[in-house]
Structures are given as C-alpha cells and as structure tokens.
Length: 497
Image 1 (cartoon, rainbow, N blue to C red):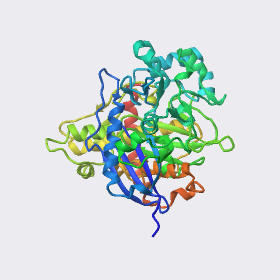
Image 2 (image 1 turned 180 degrees about the vertical axis):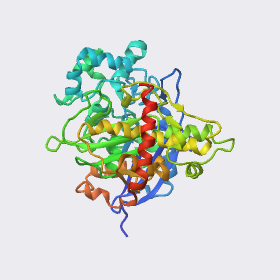
Image 3 (image 1 turned 90 degrees about the vertical axis):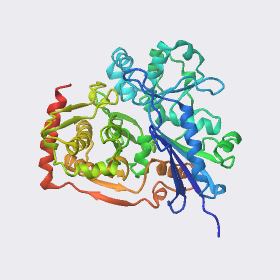
Image 4 (image 1 turned 60 degrees about the vertical axis):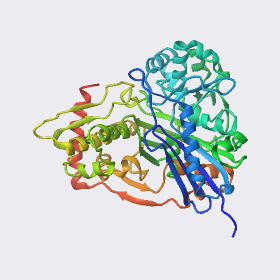
C-alpha cells in the first residue's frame, strides 16, 4: 500500500504552540499536540508592555514536534506551514541571534509614536497608502527600540514577525511576505512596495526588512541542524506562512468578498474579506493583504480585534474560581444559571492593553453595577462572556460603515466558541448565524503548506475533510433581551470614552 503524504502545520500562539499533522489527500488529522500545557510566559515589565522570548517559542516548537512525530511515519512529511501571532517584533543580529525579547501584538508602548506619525505624515496619506494609522504596529515598535534602546538597535541585522523567526530557525533564511509587511504597516498599498515614507519618517533603514516571498511558495528547506533538533528528516520544504487571523480565515475557507471568519482565543477577532482597499477613517478596524491576494484578484482582510477575550476568561478561571480552579467546561455550566444581561452586571473586557477599536485607548477592564446581595459567580461569568461578545459587536458596527455585512460567520469549534452561552450571545447580538467547523489554525497552516507545495490544484481542493459541526441561529424570542443588555453595556462603555 502506497504511503500518504503528510503536511505539518504550526500555530505560534501567545499562549501555546500547536502542531497538527494532516493527511494531505483526505484532510484528516493524523496527530496533534499543544505545548506547553500551561500558558507560555508573557512578561510585562511596565504597564502596557507585553514581551515574549522567541527562543521559548522555538523550544515549544521542538517539544510539540517530538510529541507528534512519534505517532506518524515522519518520512512521509512533505511540507510545513506556519501561522503566528501577528504584529510582533523580533530583532536579530548578523549571526541570527535574538537581540531582545519580542515586543508582541498586545504591547501598547508605541501607541503615541504611531499617533504622532499619523498626524505628521498626514492622516489622508497614511490611510490611502497604508490603509491604517501606523498605530501600535510593528514599524512603530521598531521606532520605539530605536529611540529607547539605541545600542540594541545598532546591532540589528534584520527584523521579523514571529512566524518569520520560526521559519528562520528551520531554514536559516530570513524572509517575510507582503501580507506580513502589511500587518506591520510596512507596505504601501498604493505604490505596491515597502512603505518607504513611513520608514524614512522613523529613520529606519529599509535594509532591516527581510526579503519578500509569496505566502504560498517554496520558502526554504529544513536544515540539518533544525532537522536534528526537531527529529524530522532534513530537506522538508516550508511552503506557507501567514498571520494568525488571515490564516484563521483561510482555515475556514474564507477567501472571497462577503465571507467572514471569527476567532476567540487570547484575543477576539472578526475578519471580513473585501476586494477593494477600504479603510476606517479612524483606523479602529484594520485592513491587511489577505493570503490569496493577487493583482488580478485583489483580496483584503478587514480585521476587528478585541485584545481582552480569552485572556479575560482565563483570568477569571485562574483567579475567581476558588482554590481548586474550575475547568472552562465547569465555568460554562455555571453561566447557564444566570439570565441574559446578568441582572445588570456589566464587564468591559478591555484589560489587555490599548484597544484599536477604541482608538488605541487603554481604559482597562471594568466591572460595573456589582451588587453583593444580587450577584453571584454565575452572574460574573455570564457578564464576562457577554462583555466580550458586546465588544466584538461594537467593533462590527464599525465594519458595517465600510459596507461589510454580517449574515453568516464561520469559526472553529474551539476556545470561547466551545461555550454555548458565548455562541448564543454572539448569534443573538449580531443577528448572524454562527457556523462552527472542525478546524483550527494549525490545520489551516497544514492545508496552506499543501497549497504552497502544489499538492492541491485549487483552494477548494485543499479543504477536503472540512466539515460543519454545529450551526447556531439567532433566536427571535431571545434577541430583544440581548439587545437590551447590549444597550446597557454601551451606556457603561461610553462613560470611559
């Protein structure tokens, strides 16, 4: 019997690294692993800062790989795909050594740098060329390093996004993609080139930017050293890389205008596809190059992000569920005991740094209306999950002003979407049907690797095995209750804006 080709997909997350081995022809998962079991360390030396050690990512990649390769015929692995937490900054010297911890996506230190650039370069120019304010993205993070750590900056040979770093560890090649440059606000959409005006304003040498490769393409092969560390055969091709939200959309076969994807991991995202480079004048939602963008068929992803999503749920689990700590499933059971609206208790989930959807304000998480004689644990848990959905709906109302419609949203049945209350709240507040699929980011990265390798003749062929496992429709009888609760939530939010 002939052996089947195997695709590996790595998801370089904020909390953990996940790896999936996918049988290419059937699309079936052969093995998967998540490492570590506890969430990876996130360092915050000052308020609003968030850093992680890239070497920690690599060690977790190695550990997850060794867990998976024991369960599959590794000689059948033909390609590797990588997805990663967006907007992070990794800086290395000429010997490819990391110079400082990565400043990751939810770090707020560069907000004022980006705001100043937005004003001085010109809002109209930034929006028409970059589709976004420079904001708190990767280019602004690098400017912060230049201003505050000049000795480190002087040693920088190249900068990368987190997924570029993992690919470098595998191939010894430093590369990125146009989609990646767009997420760092280092791509000029209008000119079709690196955003030299922003880099020039920041005094950043373009030589620090990696070479550009196509999202789906042969991007190097596994070196002997990397193969030995990973316990994989040398020479496996790396054929796909993409940020986590474009990749999440790809994993759900969300590729064309009018299609939307959602995810609710550490952060919460709604990501809609359009064929025109539209933007929000206030840059509260952000437009990036989607993974399947071409000159002939342009594709852009409009991204709404709420930083404090799964991390809020996790914080409550670790700090508010007693000494034995409830599981997420146990928390979800408790939530069902509280009514819609949590009897007036409101939680704003904005406790994970400056929020783009709030104009880069950092208003912190807030608990409003707590009555010691009225509310209990169930109300708290319900208010936190409703608060997350309300925040996502608040951002989607911005997306609607750009012409994006929300009729159906696709998501993987994972993270916050495992909660029945979260799913029901999402459907009833937004009015959209929620379709849940048997996939995740690491599976999407594996499918992307198959596309980049040329194993699949088309995108549609890559989604063999993708199935809907649950659909949640809005309930007309319940929708008015949720809308009343959302109105109450908005009243509280407006007190802080």
